[in-house]
Length: 252
Image (cartoon, rainbow, N blue to C red):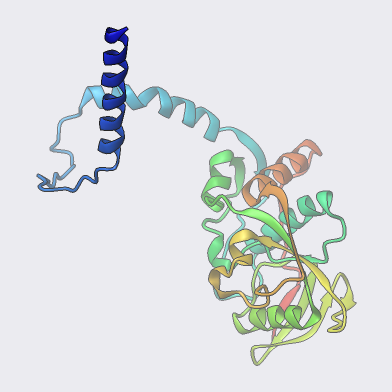
């Protein structure tokens, strides 16, 4: 019996020692760092290559998948009120969003700066979509008062146009003129459902109008996945990816 008690006592003391040690805070007292240049003079480390090569092969196989075909290069621009890339991007995301919520009024799924790369003419590889939209942004729908939508329209006009779908307007002296939403004149007295990304909804790129939404819902779909779905669906229908400058946003 005495032996058992001694063992229990030792065990308790051991556990207390461990708990006490868990409360200790470690601090860096010294370090030894170096800077190493990597160029053609550095010999290949075969062990490193051997480690990452299987992952590279798997990644290349996935990213090189052809998921569609682009009829022409879809380019981006910071200067134009609308672009081929912006129109494709917005139309694709709105189309996929409406599959989930048909009541969405219009979309501004990204700003010009959020679209990172043009889509080349020819085969569209999965990697092209990741280069275009490398972020993990989710699609969200915000219910906005008319006054907040007006602030959003002012932002679009003030910034010289942004990628949008379901919205048409003219910009004059950095002000929106005759905005049409779903073909209807903008009504400041009603509410609207706007599709955008969680980044933009959270205040990214200083987009106006999203600060105090009446409602906010996530659609459970990433912007990039919406683009991939749209390209695959269009391809399955036997069509190429294409876009036109249709005058949805003009400047005078």
